[in-house]
Amino acid sequence: MSSSQEPWDAQHIPALFSAFCGLLVALSYHLSRQSSDPSVLMSLIQCKYVPHYLRQRFEDSSEDPLPEKMRESVKEILKSDLIVCTAAAVLSFAVSASTVFLSLRPFLSIVLFALAWTVGFVTHYILPQLRKHHPWLWISHPILKSKEHQQREVRDAAHLMWFERLYVWLQCFEKYILYPAIILNALTIDAFSISKYKKLGTHCDIILITVAGMKLLRSSFCNPINQFVTLSFTVIFFRFDYRDISENFLLDFFVMSIVFHK
Image 1 (cartoon, rainbow, N blue to C red):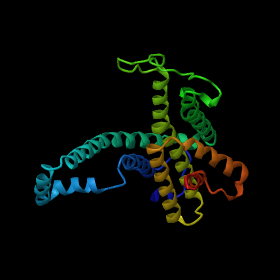
Image 2: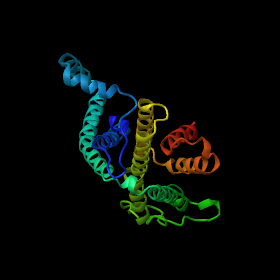
Image 3: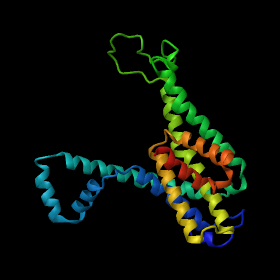
Image 4: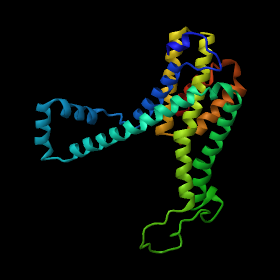
C-alpha cells in the first residue's frame, strides 16, 4: 500500500494497489472457508512435515477414523481454494486496474447500494416469506409451493423448483459479485482520498482500511444473510441522520457491522 503515499491520478490506479485488492479478496475468501478452530489444519501440517507425529497419528487412526477424514476434508478445501483464490485475485486485479470505480463515482456507489438492497430484500425476506406455510401470518397456504406439496407420501426424489434455483443464483450473485464490488469500490475511493489527504497519518489510515476491507469481505463471503440490513442502516445513519460524524463509507460500514451484530 505504499502507492497510497503519493497522490493518484483519477485516470490511473497504481498497479501495486490493484495487486493489493486482488490479494485482499483472495485472502478474505480463503479465511471465510476456514474454521475458527485451527487444530485440524495444524494436525495436517504436522503430519506433512513431522514423520514421528505422522506415525503416531497412523496408530491413533486405527482406533478412530474421524481425524483422518477431517484432514482429508481440509486438504480438499485447500485444493479448491487454491484455484478459486487465484481466479478471484486475477479478476479483482483486473477490475481494480480498470479505473471503473473512480471514473463512475458517485453514480456507481448509488447503483450498487440500490442493487444490494433489492437483491437482499428479495432473497432473504420476500422468497422465504412466500415459502412459509402462512406467509406474513395472514395467508392460509404457501404461495411458492413445491411439487410435492399436495402429496401425502413422497416416493421419488424432490423436484427442484424455479424459485429454489432463483434463490441460489441470487445468493451467489450477492455473495461473490455484488458485495465484493461494493467493498472494492469503497476501498478504491478511500485509498484515493488517502493519497490526497492523510487524516490520521498514512500508515494508520492504510491499516484501518485494510482491516475494515478484510473483515467486510470475509463477512460477505461467509454470512451474507444480514449484510443488506447492515448496509441499509449504514447508508441511512451516516448519509442522512448523522452525516457530520461519518468518516468514509468503508469505516462506516465496518463500525455498523460490529454494532449491528452486538
